[in-house]
Image (cartoon, rainbow, N blue to C red; front, side):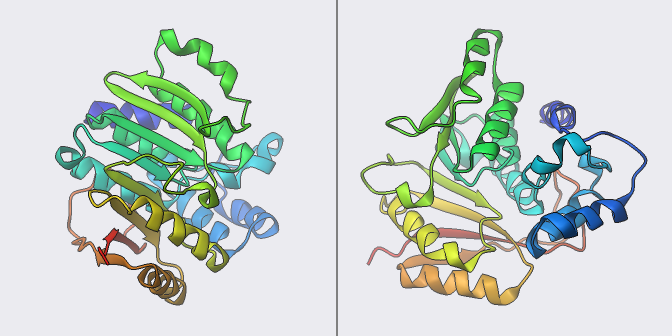
Length: 279
C-alpha cells in the first residue's frame, strides 16, 4: 500500500499545473481572495501548507484552473477511510459524486481490490482534469487510445466519458449532474462516496434527492466526508437528509488514528454513513 501511495503522490505532483518555486503562502491566499469564495480560500489555505502538495506558487498560465485543482482535506480524509476499510470495499462497486481531481478514487482503485469505480463530476474543466488524472494514474499502454476522450466532455447516452480497466477493476469517468441521478439512470452500487460536496446550501435539494435515489437499493451505503467550516451549514445538510428519510450515522474518528495521508491536525472533517431508513 505504501508503494501505491508514493506512486500516487509522485504522479499528482507531476500533474499539477503549478510550478515549484519559493513558497509564498501569502501571495497564494491574496490571489485566492481575488478568485474564489470563502470555502475555496479555506481549501487553498490548508492545501498550500500540506506536505503532500508541498508549497506551490500559481503559474500565471494556469490561474483560471487553480481552484479546480486543489485537493480538499475532506477528499484526503475520505481516501484515508477507504484505505483503512479496504476489506469492506473488496470486490465492491463504487460510485463517487463530485470527484474533483480524483484523489479519493485513484487512491482507492490503486490500493483496494474493487470490482468497479465510477468517478463523476459535471463541470467541463474539472472533468477534463479528472480524465487526465485517471489516465495518468490508472491506464495501461493498451489504454493510450483513450486519451482522445479527455477533451470530449459531452455526455453520452449513459453519461460515460472514459472507460478503462485497472487490473481487475472497471474504471469509468462520468459527466453526472446530481439532477440526472435517478432510479432509472443509475444502476445499483455497493458504496456511494462524496467529499467536500457540502458547502453550498442551494445545492442541498438536488444532492439529497440524488442520494435518496442511490440509496433506494437497500444494500447501498453512502460515505460522505465534510470539512467543517460552518456548523450551521452542516446541520442544514443533515436536516435536509432527514427530510428525505435517510438514516445518518457519524463515524467516530479518534484523533490518534493512524492515517495514510498527513492530514492537518487543526482541520475538522466529519464523515457520515448514510442508508435508506427503509420507510
